[in-house]
Length: 325
Image (cartoon, rainbow, N blue to C red; front, side, top):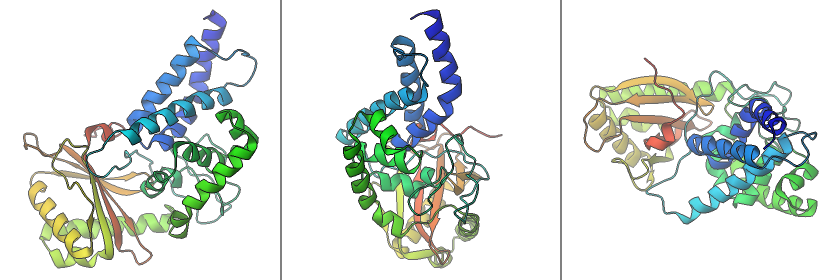
């Protein structure tokens, strides 16, 4: 590689790393995988840079990153996973999705993408990092997922998407249509992380902690929607439910039992992760089979009741969360 190409690649890394990481995170649902994909993308840029260094680097980097990401998704689908799969939590700070279509784009880990122009058909950066959205993407094929992200989150045109994925524009349109059709169930129940929804989730989590501390199963039950689900992702490392727990009574008992077993000596820190309030729970050392850290998050319905509880325990899923004193 010539010194000129090396300098160009280094400059491209600094200019586009944040954007490519955001794309790779949404493509994989994993911060650790996004780190690996970004590193591999820029490693390839150093070894085999674009033939024409006068052209913009971002389209070339997107092509490499999405090809690597699709390969990763295919491998993941072929590999059995112990228990439910959940996205990796990331800090998103105090950002919120605008309640109105003309609102400013929320800041976040990759706020360099263009703002939304069509609120009926596009998802902003914060919503597209939410647990609900990332889980909905799991129903798509790797190629459909990539097309939907490029078109509806990162605002690529049909032509740009086709060029990035080495497809015809007709193929992009067909894949996009099928992806949106599969996302229809998500869109009908769509609950973007607006300020109002963030506050409802914050209140629900606060009341849940109070009820848990009091050992009040009835109070926990009252906070839950009738069809609530509790999903735990320990990646086979730690004690956790291997199947979803469904129904208010079962989830209330499950959470109370969990709190009783893990609550003593735990340090609980509120944070905003993936657009919504969450709890980072650090456990005392030396508890056999128990995760040293757990992220607890929830989705709430229109009445402010918890409709889904997420518990992320797997070590690799928590790499993006820095420890805080």
